[in-house]
Length: 501
Image (spheres, one colour):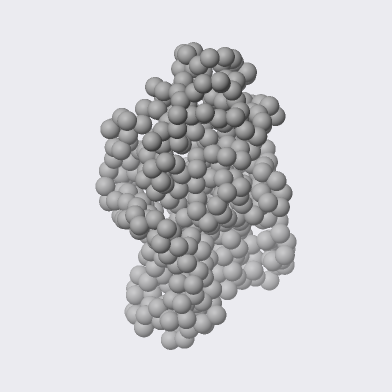
């Protein structure tokens, strides 16, 4: 592919400080617009909050060890909340950081191969793609792992840029990023960068360079970064390896029974739609690949290999496509400047992203912020919180709970272990806690009137229309009727049930 972006016209797109600084401002500009979305944002923000006020090493959900994901995103959110307070925008700094790292990594590679102006346009394509923009402010682990995977790929490519030679510093930085990717979302932090880089090298018959990836220094860096937390968790919880590695990686990838079942072609439809208007450049970009060199072919391979990897399992989420976005953006950047409309595309993409965030801020679907703020202002230190037949993920975060809430449900239902929902999450988490902790935190909903003795009042968070569940509790009164839930309070009782044995 011939170079399409002239390098002799200095513009703001060729100024590194401007490009990366403007990118940071763009990613941060709207992260405070909206409340937490459910379930993901509420769940992960509350886990980070629990770690901040409790055990900073072990992720917990309602006081129970929660090993669905590793801790890096929680640690970043903890640090942000420690510095800036427990605000939703502070919890969103982890995905924002991942998005910035992805775009900065793309900028480094494009600058090395094509020049600074091409690099600036690549960042512009990425930053104004709605999928990237929204992913950069959505609290889950997907954008952080996508950013660290991108940094890994770029580090390795720069390390092996000259055939037959290896830049040990760049290689070590790549392995450092891979270790952080493991702490973001597990083994894909190693597998996906290898899937991008190794076949690309082998297609050029550079098998010796592929072997150089396994340099002892790089592997040592990875082990120092990635393993201490995993080893510590395995020492504390004998079933950690089987659950975190075997169940959450291999079983989830290879078997059914999980939510979000989508057809094989899901990403083929979703990614072009959520990258509009830039995806309109893809047909022209793909036509230009005939006879292209290895560098130009990297971009479609980066995108296609990762999208294919995530297309094979039956369960698919939109966020799984995020690690593939640098491949799409790099490919588009090589042809976009030939036309006259790339500025229009950038404005349109930015407008779509901002409009989507605005709609979410206006609707705030499912938020329990209103009743949580009442809890926060009215509850006293010895009071307890009971979440009735629901996770109500955002309540612990907004209410700033210092002790984990009790969750009441039909925990004796044998079907829970076969589901993929909030009950299954807590059921699994209880397996890593002591029997006494599990019994205290997961209370039978049939026995709400028999909660153990305590010095303070008991607050109940219920779904609208579930008031019958607290009708038998002496003195229970409705304190607030929220948009998506009700808040009840029962006073301290003179007689109550004994602690469970």
